[in-house]
Amino acid sequence: MAERKIYWFVEPLDTWTNSVIYSEISNSLGSEQVQYELLVDKGSFFDEVNVWEVPHSIITKLYRNKRELNLNFRVYNRANNRGIAKLWRFEDPAYRKTRKKSF
Image 1 (spheres, rainbow, N blue to C red):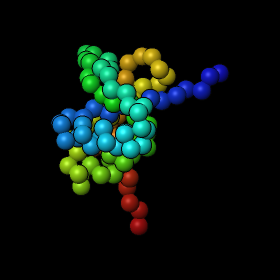
Image 2 (spheres, rainbow, N blue to C red; image 1 turned 120 degrees about the horizontal axis):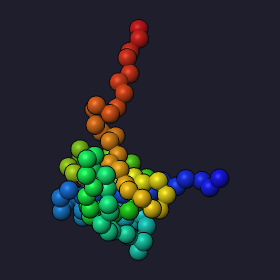
Image 3 (cartoon, rainbow, N blue to C red; image 1 turned 135 degrees about the vertical axis):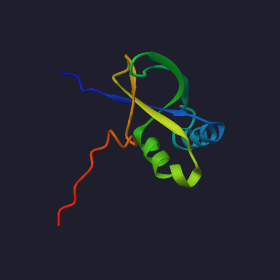
């Protein structure tokens, strides 16, 4: 059975975030930047969004610096190289499980 590969995409929601993502990709990947329109599942409908394809390590850096650099973006992922991408709801409080503290 073939191993399933996860592809990661980031959608900048403003020009500042776009420039930060572009510079991070340029520093990390060199000339391998890939930006294109991606078909994403928005729940009850599908939409095309402009995204950068990035490794998960860049998404981790973006989340780590999100508040400090005032970044505004969405993250999508897709299994394998074909198909519909889905919003990665990591920051959605309803999506994250809360951990109860025990004393």
